[in-house]
Amino acid sequence: MKRLAISLSALLVSSVAVVAADDPIAVRQSLMQAVAGAAGASGGMLKGEIDYNPVVAKAAIATLYGVSQAYGDYFPEGSQNGDTDAAPEIWEDMEGFHNALADFQADAAAAFEAAGKDGPADLAAFKAAVQPVLSNCRDCHESFRIQDD
Amino acid sequence: MLRNLLFGGAALAVLAGAAFWFLTRPEGIGSSALAAVGPGDATRGERIFWAGGCASCHARPEAEGERLLELSGGLELETAFGTFVAPNISPDPAQGIGEWDESVFVNAMLHGVSPEGKHYYPAFPYPSYARMETQDVLDLFAYLKTLPPAAEETAPHRLSFPYTMRRGIGLWKLIYMHEEPLVELPADAPEAVLRGRYLVEGPGHCGECHTPRSFAGGLQFERWLAGAPALEGDGRVPNITPSSAGIGSWSVADITYYLESGFTPDFDSVGGEMVAVQKNMARLPEEDRAAIAAYLKAVPEVEGE
Image (tube, rainbow over all chains, first blue to last red; front, side, top):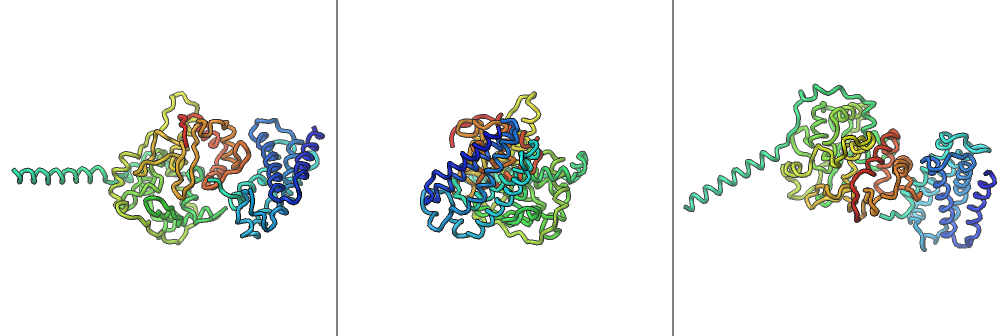
């Protein structure tokens, strides 16, 4: 199982690597797909659809942590143009965007720390660790993603 | 003959006017009517406060965290009828509701009648609150009394004729305001579904945005929760009935988790006006979110939107 989780993490990271490095939109979108996968595994356990498993929990938290470290590097000037849902507010308010990113990084780092070597011991511990990280999705999207309504 | 006709016409006009005046009179309760209900409990009232999302309109615009509890008002709702300004409902005696007693508050919440005995505009969603238990309203009042006072004066609404005529709201209330539950449920319906009906149709006032309105601004009950144009701007509010156009594919667990975390079943995050609502819902006990979910699976399926 641990092997599975490790290869799962590796898979998520390698899916990033195959994207052309000179296409920041594609890279950051693949990073968000990795987050969606981690949020999906987390939500499945929190909803009780999947039995709690500390290794899967750890993989989800590690993915969130890794993405939080890398994500901010893929918003160079000019990459607001193209097939992207990234809102112009990112480039108009780069400081605000970096503050939001710093919150994500801090929450993800705390969760990674709390997860320890073997992952959170039980569902309650996992919930306490991961929920603050996941709340960043909503908060950042609210200001910095194009609203589809 | 002509004189008789004129006289008869005038008499009819007077009668019609009298009938209008009678039918549209703002009716509330007297203070003695509350004797049978217990005193308000602020702890229970806090749960009602978040279920009702009071802060989303009455907190200072853009407030977050603890400052959501300063109910200075000031948010402007730009609608087809004009601009409504959410009032100060903090316990400030001069600008807020510090001087109100329980019967004044109950009249506002359950009857849409102001301390001066006038109709409130239904931008204040009392047509939903009319379905609330009086005890819950008193509990909410007790909780509001514990919040910090705010000194801002409330600006007046900016409406154009004929919407400036409050008396006409009396007729509107006869058509669109009902104390009874909207969705009929069997007597042996599960407790959670009944609780969810109360939360959604009453304090939660979900239908005020998720149900389309008639030209007169009343809810089209036959399309209950089936989605509607946003009251502000040109967005749409989604269909949340259990149809294929709505959220029929969401499980009870999906809806419950969405209200707690803001994640849809495909792990997108909540957006738009619903962000503030979801954050309020996250403060409710889990059983209330589960009850809302159970009710949303039990309402009639409506397609479209």
